[in-house]
Amino acid sequence: YKELDCYSAQRMIKDVFLDSDTQVSVISALWGGQGQNPTPIGYAAEARNLIREQIGKHRGLIHGGVLPNESGQIDFMEIQAKKFRVDAWKLYPQWGPEGKGFFMDDPEYGLPMLEKARELGIKVVCAHRGLPLPNLVYKYSRPEDIVRVGRMFPDLTFICYHSGFEPGVEEGPYDPERCKGVDRLIKAYIDHEYQPNRGNVYAELGSCWRYYMSKPDQAAHLMGKLLKYMGEDRICWGTDAIWYGSPQDQIQMFRAFQITQEFQDKYGYPPLTLNAKRKIFGMNAARLHGIDVARLKQENSTDRISTIREAYAAKYNPS
Image (cartoon, rainbow, N blue to C red):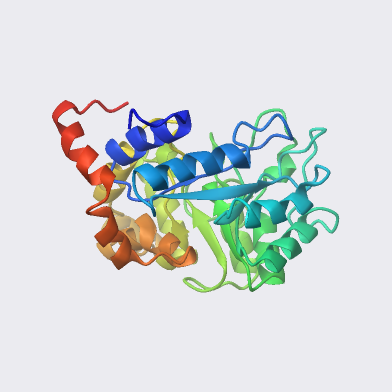
């Protein structure tokens, strides 16, 4: 990996591909206007291309970041789709050029963006919902709007990044009156008559699994609620690496984690089975992105990263 001249690609290869069992990663977009965004699409595409060309051709995906409340951003989606060939879109409705965000069903910003996604044929829309960002208006971090637009755009797929979680909120059994944390997403899901394992709205575990995995009861409530109300087919793995370094600790903890029989009996939670973990770890996201898993496994077993891993194992040094 020393041959690579892109820092993000280097970090991704070491932290994600060498120091963890991850097979495919996403270079996601961050918030910030023109000239201020730390992951502009050209930079993300460069990292993706270096990974594909020098490591493995199906190892990296990219999000096209869209900040529709900034001038010209919706039109720029066409360039992202045709020139940079993004795999999905990423929204930060909390963000705004003057500190004010928007809701995804806002007729001025949200709906035109989604109509453009439909027009361009890139129909996976990821949005940072929950996990409030500092110095931004709290109400625009709420996750209910992603469920509302799910009903309005049944031909699009919506992935709720962070599942509506809020640091400092103690996750317990679902309470529709609570209006905090993950319960907000689940309530909207139920109120809009979504059924488990059906529909076009997904929960993503970035940062929330890492936050709760050292709190076993809360982790059980987090996963139990998502499994019970959204279903194992509607949960996607996420780690928010490389913010935290290698995601291997999160992977190992999730592999080992179980929901106790006591919690299953008391709260009606399904068990977190091996098959459910397999879907959450990757099969659900692979389906959404049209990835042929059998072909991916075959190619990944012989691409360059598999050779690098053998050499790296002798001097293993995770971050």
